[in-house]
Amino acid sequence: MSSVNSEIVGSEANKVRQVVVDILTEVAPDEDISCLKNEVALRDQMDLDSMDFLDIVMELKKRHSIVVPQEDYPRLESLNSCVEYLSPKFLN
Amino acid sequence: MNISHQNSSTNQEEHFDSIVIGAGMSGLAAAIRLAMAGQSVTVLEQHSIAGGLNSYYRRGKRKLDVGLHAMTNFMEQGQKGKPLGKILKQLRLRYGQLKLSPQKSSLIHFPNQKLCFSNQIEKLQADIAQTFPDQKENFEQLLEFVDHFNETDLNHQFIPASQHLSQIITDPLLLNMLMTPLLLYGSANQDEMDLAQFVIMFKSIYLEGFMRPEGGVRTIIQLLLDRLDSLGVKIRYRTKVQAILKSEEHVTGVLLQSEDVILANKIYSSIGSLESEQLADLPLRSRPGALSFVETIFHFEQRPSDSGADQTIIFYNDRPKFQYHCPATLFDPSSAVVCFPNNFEQDDGPEGVIRITFIANYQLWSKLSKNDYLNAKEQVKMAALATIKQVAPNFSATPIFTDTFTPMTIERYTGHIGGAVYGSPDKWRDGTTELAGLFLTGTDQGFLGIVGSLLSGISIANLHGISRD
Image (cartoon, rainbow over all chains, first blue to last red; front, side, top):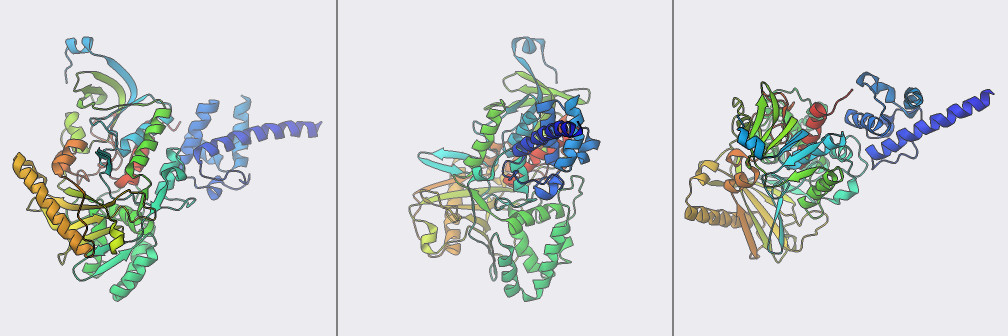
């Protein structure tokens, strides 16, 4: 039972991960997104600054009507933290 | 400003979230950002062509660029944390679309000393070590100072650069030489420069360097226009603003010269601070700029590099000390910027080209009769040819095409009061004005050059136009 459950959670997590990856592809078209590590800060793997995080938030709102208040920006630090933070918002 | 009933009933009244005044680099960039955030935006441009201070025109079969001779802030594809990379991402453009070509090398040409620099700082470092051996370590100290300076702080106050830097670079000649290209390429202050502006320019010229997009400035403008088009934003050309309208203490829209009114909650003005203050009937808090230029563009059948002139840009000065101020004569041929657009790594020009720019006195030009004006342009051309003899003595080709523009030309096409290319000496870094809802972007916000203007439009749109919650 629990393995089925974690698989569902896993595929949901993968979907959210893909949403973030798609947005990163649009926000930073010159970067190679294919080998991003889930646990490493996005800033350490890509050329992103605060203006680009504003864009990530903008795209989340535009594409998925998800609102990320400014105090939550740090939660978008890595792909893992994005998935953890955004997944509940997709379920709502 | 009162709008009569007759006007408001017979003319259209449209409404937008934001109006951008001026389709120069900063206005276009701001409009792109605002539209990306989902706002309704319209761009108003008095001229029939976009680009503002960095634009282009055509004479017969020839395509000409006006404005900066080169783009600054060169970066290789994939370099991190560079201004060019930031603007490309923010505008969703790709590095490859600009088809950039770096400079070969440039020269600071003084009577008894010369300094060569390229997009590799080591070249300038080596040249300084050789020409000014006792300043070698001081220059390294300067590099460190520049590296640690936070020049993009929008709350920064004016600090005179030369005073501050004379404590690091103790040879006044070297400091004067180093400042010459930076003053010529971006100081609205006479003989002085704001320290933050110095750092911005130092990085963009000496640490990053010069480049040229294939096809010149058209390539960038076209990319920006295509972006705007894809976002559904319309630019209204030949559309001059008569007044910025307000109620109480907030903008409400603009009154066009056609008497049409366009309403908006926010207005981003790239036309200059004084120019905007006049349109909005505000107290004039910005001083007019005193620095204008004349430029002559020569086309030749031969390429200058065929005769050994292979520098990209020469910053020429024949006085012991470079003077960066409004001259007492129509123009000052004792210093010049000489640009060889063929001398970037890729030369896509069909002809040899030299552009020569002198500092000029707007007031004197504005008083000339038609005939004297034409004669004065001829004087500029002769002085420019004499300067070519100085900097490229072996290049003796006869021009097949010549065009000269003056402070009057600059004022007519860009709307900058006094033809002040770098705007007012007063900069408003955070883009705010005395009127709520009216924001400054571009030259008088304080980021200059093509990359600087784009960054200005992006930063101000992000700061004041795009909600963070």
